[in-house]
Image (cartoon, rainbow, N blue to C red; front, side):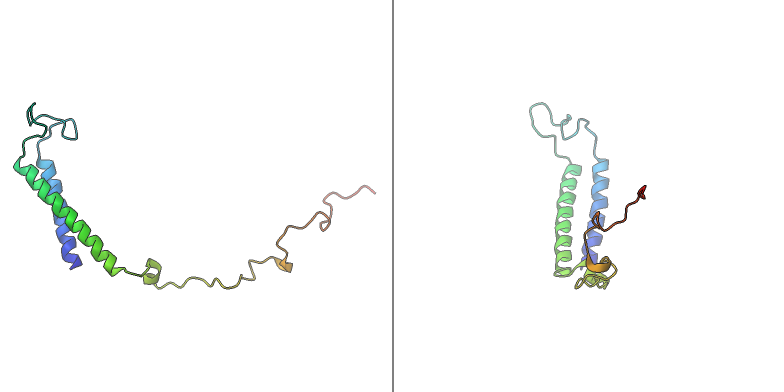
Length: 120
């Protein structure tokens, strides 16, 4: 079912691209060009314009249908679950991550030997 809708969706996408490219360019994007006359607010409805609307509505319907099908197929699962990879254990810290002696603070000035020998 999903493959059939996907193939129809791809055909509609290619058809929509073809119909839009076949239309006459009026210049001045967003329908601001001529063609409808000075008294009308809309350009004249052509056959290609109506086919564009039909393809656009069908494309939107197949997009929503594919989204619903994908949501139903993936309900409650994660991509990580589908890969079958088990995450690393998070229970106790690893021994190699804890510094020796269990002290997490840097050494104090009293604990370290002076870097410069004294002149005594």
